[in-house]
Image 1 (cartoon, rainbow, N blue to C red):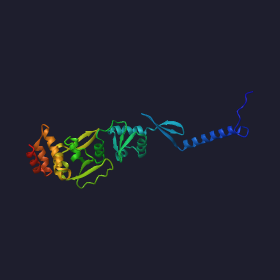
Image 2: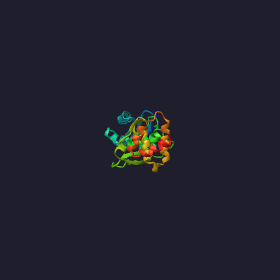
Image 3: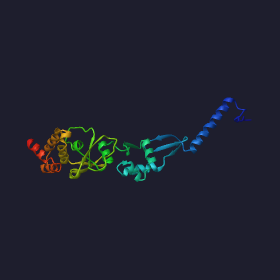
Image 4: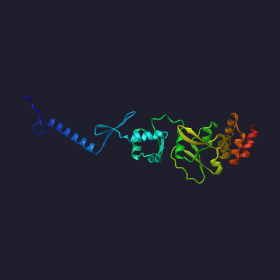
Length: 259
């Protein structure tokens, strides 16, 4: 006759009883955790994110996949307000951020992590955080390769009277331009798939002369020298922006001195 396994109780050896009781307790905890949707841990693979609920693996809901498609359709970068307007909840955004599906470029600005690295992350971030601003001065000169200076902050022009941008990263220098000095010479370039507004080369040189006392006249002269070495260079176009910035006379003097 085959011996029967002892039941949990007084007839089982003490060690076996303790083991059985521990197993029952563990099962009870797992059941309670499952009922409460307690997330035991979070696993990430390259293409699939999986939650583990009380040791039971189940695919993540389609919300993250849908949100990822929304990001892709919009170039891979979204502000919090844009994501919410597109139907992505804050909870989904935070899950995507914590799992590494998206990366936070700046406060309230997110980007799909699967995309290639940004060539100009600071310009892209500022363009999205300050959509009505225009990259100017040293940052614009560096973009057009008209200076050897390495910007330590992004120079951004904002229309006088507009609300001051609040941005924690990257560091920015805000300049208040008014009227035609703000609206003229704006170019829109696609950088890392994102539209970035930058003043054109001639307008940036004129701005450098206007702010020569703040930046240093050597920066304006360097930009002018590099610009003139390029062919063709449109002097009349340059001086037209000089008139707008009220530095035409000064620019003519330097043009004559360096001709």
